[in-house]
Amino acid sequence: MHMNKTALLIALCAAPLLAQAAPADPKQAYIDSTFTAMDNNKDGHVDKGEFATYQQARFSKQADSIDAAFAAMDKNKDGKISKEEAAVVPEIAKYFTGLDTDGDGYLSLKEMQQAMVAAQTADAPGK
Image (cartoon, rainbow, N blue to C red; front, side, top):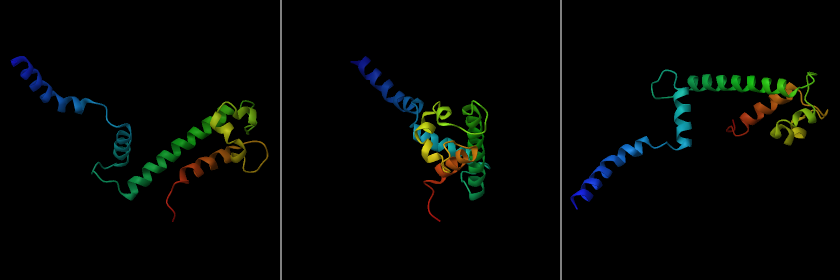
């Protein structure tokens, strides 16, 4: 009986430590890491300037990714993406017609960039 009480006591004492070691909720971990990245002066608050700086850096990184993806898809290097070239990226191929805003049968870098901006602002609150 004494062994069971000891084991129970150890388990009860260890439980809070184990809970702290357990992986956090992925959504909360994402929120926490994003907040930390935005809080440049580490004062525990994100002001409008910090938020704008973070968003601009995020936008620039995504723009670079779009440029690189466009260059990778443009196999014949003619400066536009055909439906066949777009097939290597399923999401681009799936929405090709909607992304081709001028209806010429090709995606330009400008159309890809416009799609990125539209995607980023789609859920933005109204002004």
